[in-house]
Amino acid sequence: MPYRLYYWPGLPGRGEFVRLALEEAGAPYVDVGRLPASEGGGAGAVVAARKGALGGIPPFAPPILQVGDLVLAQTAAICAWIGERHGLVPADPEARAHAVQLQLTVMDLVAEAHDTHHPLAIGKYYEEQREAAAVKAAQFRTERMPAFFSYFRRVLAASGGPWLLGATRGYVDLSLFQVLSGLDYAFPLAYAREVPAELQVLRQRVAALPNIAAYLLSPRRQAFNEHGIFRRYPELDG
Amino acid sequence: MPYRLYYWPGLPGRGEFVRLALEEAGAPYVDVGRLPASEGGGAGAVVAARKGALGGIPPFAPPILQVGDLVLAQTAAICAWIGERHGLVPADPEARAHAVQLQLTVMDLVAEAHDTHHPLAIGKYYEEQREAAAVKAAQFRTERMPAFFSYFRRVLAASGGPWLLGATRGYVDLSLFQVLSGLDYAFPLAYAREVPAELQVLRQRVAALPNIAAYLLSPRRQAFNEHGIFRRYPELDG
Image 1 (cartoon, rainbow over the protein chains, first blue to last red):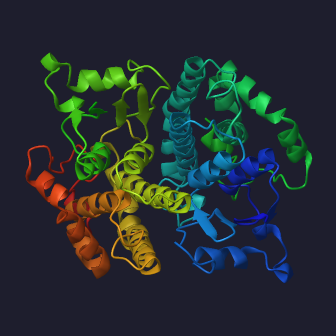
Image 2: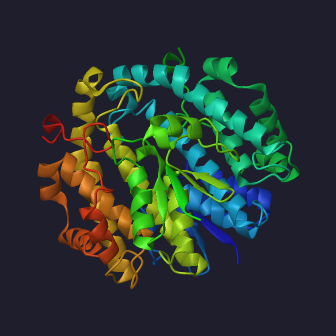
């Protein structure tokens, strides 16, 4: 039974963390939001899923994963679900808890990156909050992003590498790859200045995983753009 | 072996979500940050833990839970760990995943509540970002808080209640209690206007659990204040 992913069409967004896990797992999935509306897809299908049309415990927001009777939301919860069923995290409970810890820290970084262009109101345009965004982005570039980078470098040192949790690649590595790629897109100057060599190596290591390498070359992979989490507004890059 | 919680003294903060789970579980724990420095506690002990002094996979920020060889960070990861070992979540994997989903949504609401007084820079004082805070708080009061309230009411309706996941109280109920209490403290006018009756009932139901009722009357429970996540700045309550 294939997984069904419900996420907004037109941007990689938080759905991309789920896609990377599914792709590395080699798990069949339908990217419902990217199907034509005539095939039951499109933004309308995502809106309906968000409103609870799939049943079960309702989601607050996409991404939403459906498989069998399960309807699950929240990016980190979905990645853990996939990871634990497809060998993308070690089997022992401590390692699984640490994977959740690291995934939540990745998602915190994602949220802070998003808030650089939407510091005041999620429901308003960037152009309505540009001044506040400039302040927020400056703090992000000079303090927050370096703090997260330094943190993940320390995690690699503590685990012994080459992956965040040690010897085996897992869903957290895929998610860190995605946020590093997004930050490189949105803040190319600050990223080049701040990224530790160890994280660049990890990013390249993920991109070279056979399933991921094939995915990145496929039409299933979407480019970053200015509708998503990671937006290239040069004025926010200092 | 008692749990050891590392969290900043002087505010309930994100540590409180962990304390509520430990208290309801009846699990012995040491609140290290609230011990005197002469007994190895205080802010210095929390700083050291944050810097990795406890070993293992390092934490990015408190709260940090230590038990045996495990050192675990991220509020939602800690609550899930405790909940799964002390009967604060059903045993089936689907319910556990849904608990994580709901806990992450509670934590998203916590983060948005925090950002009302720190929209631009975590490292600066509220007084340095008051104008932006007024804009952020207005959107929070009128759009975001009601959206989250409406969501959790729908979850109760979907589960059949009386608890978020159905028949049995769990760690997610405790966390929702805490965020409702915090929002009532920080935004008393908006909270009274917006909170659905079903969520008030749930909040009272949690407060009446014997272990929680005893905890709330004990000196271990800390009052909200203007150093924490939920701050009563009347100008932000509209």
